[in-house]
Length: 66
Image (cartoon, rainbow, N blue to C red; front, side):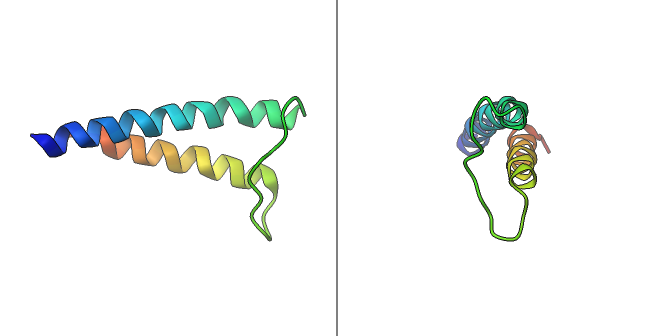
């Protein structure tokens, strides 16, 4: 039972992070806010989109019930 509560908390945290990344992405494309993450060899747009997708994957795991 305790592990389930922890997974849900992690899911909410990842969902909030994904939401922030999803809002940040178009604002960065329109140059209202700067892109922050820079991975050598990747475009800045790709690294930010990857962070949003990764956060959504963690959120899905957090809310997934067996």
